[in-house]
Image (tube, rainbow over all chains, first blue to last red):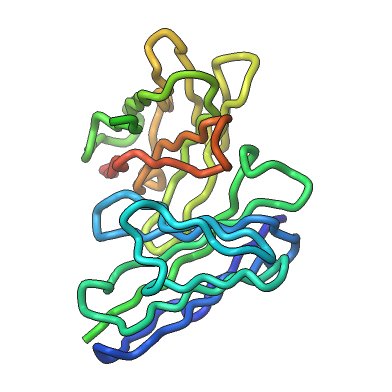
Length: 118
Length: 114
């Protein structure tokens, strides 16, 4: 199998605080992890591409200082939403591609994290 | 702008009806194509994918899709839907010249009435 987990599954925080979301590949090593944002009834929008041991590549319009991504190991990537505001409330989803297999092949998705900023 | 477009936003069918969901992309060159499904409250799951070879690909749960290069299309089909097929369906593309980034269509909500 290829299981990807996310923690927490949901989080409520106050405006101005920071929230860290973890993405783990449980039974495989992931060279590349991707972070997406999904608004209600809308599609997934790629935020950034995270490669183990290097800086993340952010999509146009995504603030890298607001959405900090760390990919310290082949099984863990973290997304930290800094100084969160209500407009950051969303569903954040990660995906992972297997080591040794191109991400062209298939990505495995986590269950997502629902962030609500009050 | 280059994109992935799903024509139907919300489809309502009765059980046993046939399904076809449209997907078009506007990228030139070689692409890899995917259909993902998101059941209520669950994470994205891969239905099927096309990389090369036979343009008619079969996926899980009786779904299939046909890649028509000349039309830049990758429509999803199922001959007879079930109530359990109620879900959100996403078409997605990876451009082979890219870094593995999936570009998603807007999604189609399928509601199957029992």
